[in-house]
Amino acid sequence: LPSSESEFSLLVYFSPHRMKLPLTVEEIMNFGESNRELFIKSSTYSLIPITVSEMGLTISWIFSSDPKSISFSVVYQESKDTPLDQCKVLIPMTRCNSHKETIRGQVKVRNAGIYTLIFDNTFSRFISKRVFYHLAVERPVIYDGSDFP
Image (cartoon, rainbow, N blue to C red; front, top):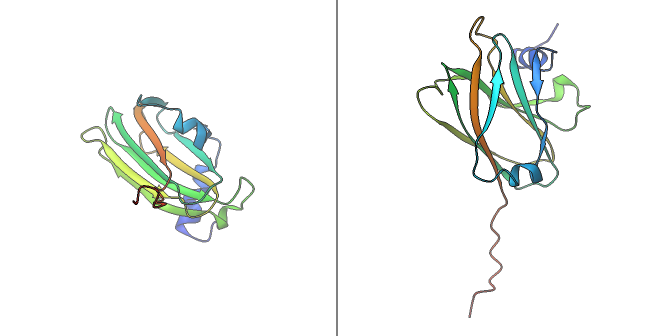
């Protein structure tokens, strides 16, 4: 049995009742301005694992859902082989009223690894959801003094 609530939630999210959509930083940078769409069946959830190799990046997201709310979380793991008890919950599972307002957020990449966005509809027994989302990755701006006279 899991030893903590966060370990239990991780166990749930790495079970087979999910859809997985792995992305790299390069793929996200090629998203352009368009939104993507996820269809999440009732009683399931979707994972978007983002593999990051360079530190200092910022991963940001914007999403809305239809119909009704969706739960959202962000989890970090060092590699795909990292044991569940060593994964870190960066943003705890939160029920979002994303059908009423657009949800925005970001995480700063402090370590290379896999940053997984979780869209959870397991609380809904009958209603499937559509999630419209946009992801972006930004590199830090480093001032090199080159425009100094």
